[in-house]
Amino acid sequence: MSALVIPQFISQWKQEHSPAPESPVSDIKSWMSALDDKNKFLQLYPLGYVIFDIDSITEAVTPYNASKNPQGYEFNFKSVRLVENTPYRISIQLPEVYKDSQLLLTNATISGDPKKMQEFGNGYGFSNKSGLNIMGIAQVLQYNGNKVTWIFGLRNGY
Image (cartoon, rainbow, N blue to C red):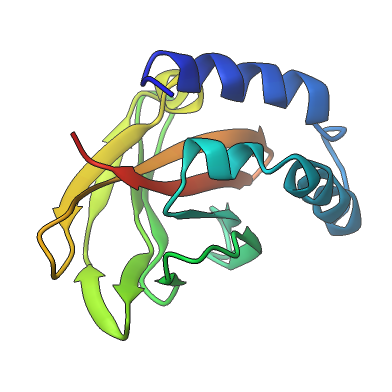
């Protein structure tokens, strides 16, 4: 799936699956489950993905869903945080990425205009121990008051 198709798919998916603005966590979990049945995010991010909220006031990080994939990539949320959240810029420190207990990505930060981060997201390239180039892409799925719902997915690099 090309990079141009990803924003179109995400936009269509959000229209079909967006919870009400003040949805409780249980609604978000069912929202995620509906997607899992279709495995659409695994088509976009075949090496794995995770969906999570960050609360801009309490800095709490709530992972909702991580793909179960045979690639063996794991996500650690201990370093995830909003670095900046203004009307003009949003920045996030990404989850750490591990494979076979080896740290592959740490202290990676991405940022952009809030509207562009929701429409397109932003990426960070890195390599695994066998030299495979990997692209980690983070995108805002939803802004809901002080919470921001993100997806962070992994694809083969170019």
